[in-house]
Length: 285
Image (cartoon, rainbow, N blue to C red):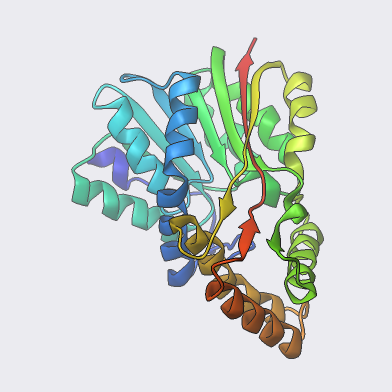
């Protein structure tokens, strides 16, 4: 499995994205992938991923989507995982070994430098997939520009990301909850991210030689007795303490939030309007 074990040493130190790369976050990402796998697979089918293709997983994390993609493209295909966390890429390797998948390559590096990291793959990528990546980046347009150099003419990019993120709310509304949503949005923006990134993506794609062929929204509502309720539930457990540690919430505000959330979990009349996740497909001209 030479491809699955050769991590290029582009970064000397471990880096973290806004939610961290600790064990709890890795587990949360696995739960998240399972709960959103149907929409991911629907997008992959729509973009036309088939056996034999070379697919780039941009910001692959620990590889939950990459494992599925590797099975889809099969032995004649290739999945290239790029991420800035060495720990996550080691998890990709471990998963590939346990599943006996030998068609994954791992590249350690900042996705802002995607063109130089993928110099050997220039104009050879059939499809690039980016889920919940661009919203966290300081310069997402640089990533789009880099992708325009590595995706082959006629190749495609498939994006799943946020727009109107802070519309997320409990019903009935509670200020204790809304305060945390505002803090999350501010924390993303303060690090250079944009929780409404999809609003800017079509223009970025057009400027770098892509034609947008599809935009749609996955809007979901969660109730306490449904699987998808565990998506925000697992997020709060990881990120609300981080908001407190970094000064976006006081201890009292965090405590009030968790009290409100626990009440909601026990109330069958409550529902949650989840943040809108958009699908964008574009073709390189």
